[in-house]
Image (cartoon, rainbow, N blue to C red; front, side, top):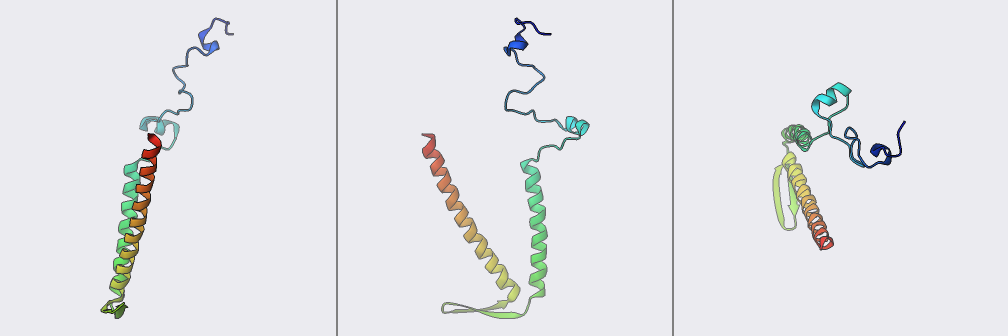
Length: 120
């Protein structure tokens, strides 16, 4: 039973074993193993997984290019190009990725400008 003068009953002192309000302690690897809790995913782990997926996709793309060696003709305005079909698809994919990166870069600059304006 607590008394009215007990500081823990009034909430004056926080329990040192409990986390602060609204925060959760980050489990150490040893604590995670003991409790069976999953460790938090890190940026390095996410990057590593993305690199593995990217490498697998590049291997599939290389196989696709090697299997599509028949020559095709591409006409762009007044220019005419002739090269393997796989290379044409690769160039189209690169052009699409560059356009997507350009749009994403413009959006990031827009958000950065807005954040700077709001911080003033």
